[in-house]
Length: 177
Image (cartoon, rainbow, N blue to C red):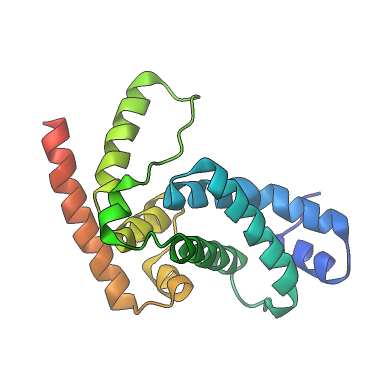
């Protein structure tokens, strides 16, 4: 039987450890990929992902059933990633392009080449634009959801997305012409 996120959350609130295990198994890969893309360091992404789920468990009573669980979860992940940058003092724009994306080896060579080109182009964006691109295109969140998750005004998110797309278009046009 397939349980919804809400069923699992209710189970967790009632002390069901199996519900917690199922919820973590369902969401861990997506949260890890997000953290990995934002942070650029696989080991740190593992640590942050663990912190995300610890925070979920500690704050599960605060989750309201009328909210979208994925938005709440990615908000926590976003905040943990931003805490990481604050802690490491990597918010400085001179270090923004030094982060790399985590890579996988299970992709075809052509896809790897294209993926690496796109990743390099994304890394040339300012950190805030990178984050909006990752949340929107890799995690399929709407601009409104991103605005809520990051506590940023919706017009700002739309502007960052628009500018990022234009910049990526120019960067990728040079590579693929």
